[in-house]
Length: 422
Image 1 (cartoon, one colour):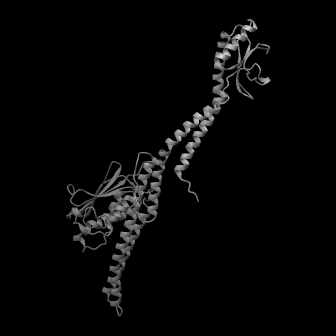
Image 2: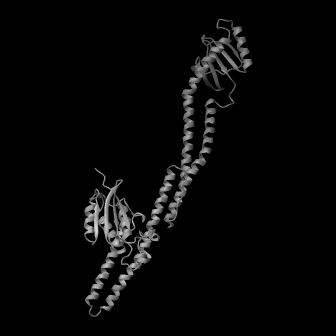
Image 3: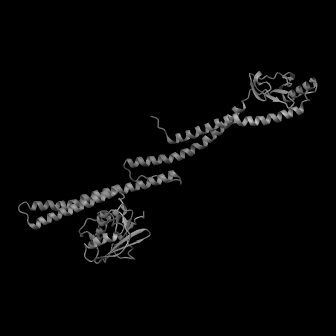
């Protein structure tokens, strides 16, 4: 099946439009423009001829002599009639118009070609045969001229249309590469028009897809590794307790199952946040009340500051702050302080502790799933706390950053958009 290439469709549309313009221009010229110009020319020609010819009262021989002289000098056939339609003089064999056209000025078609009919101011009638039957008519000449213009414009438009659609074909190839599994496919952004914006949007979408798929692959690989540890401990505990399990063994098994359940819960939550980039913001959440509830759960945790409500999911925001407090408890040092404020239309929540903070070499990696610093390998946890904090913040239209060590040794700032007034 023949593919309908876009550049051919655009090009043929341009050519068809040019042809239509040519035809309409010629028709309008023939119906309106030429008639008006012909009337002006005919009036001037009639006045001029009446000045050259003897007056109507002059003898017929004198008028005939002047007609013969004009015919010879101009190489044309001429017939002169009086106001009653009687022939006065003639030179050559000028074709006669049809009877219904007698006495009518303008170009008149005859079997031998067009002739010019002039009505003089004194009522006489002049028929001129220019002997130009071999050449094209005025309408044909106009069509040829406009056709030549259309061909030139068409030839000039072809490379422009091809350049436009070539960039669309590059986008198509990029989409096909993405579909084939090459997530690194990108297209060149050329120009500043809508196609350039489309190419830029495609690159942004491809980058997000690549990051999302990469994160899922990493999550799957790390989850498979992390799930083996509690499962191995459960299996070993079951083997060792085949007889009569001790209370310590039962408690250890329950702890392993709870740990496994918590890990699966965090993995599922990360997957849901990846699938739904934004959360429902119809609820307004009081950050101060939310933070007060979470700080009560931890010793040596305090709350300061205030801020207006923020739109979001209370359950997820509870999880966000809980993970930050857990992170400060595991990797920092008490006391832990939660400071709430607002600036530039954003509510801010800073969680700081008195620990040494995150090393410079690890600051760009702490938000990656399952990442733990080399000096924190023995600390209980799976490295999903801060990645979940980032996902929850971004799902609410906010962000999470590490406070500069020059300002705060160990602090994390979360920014969330404030609720818009109705």
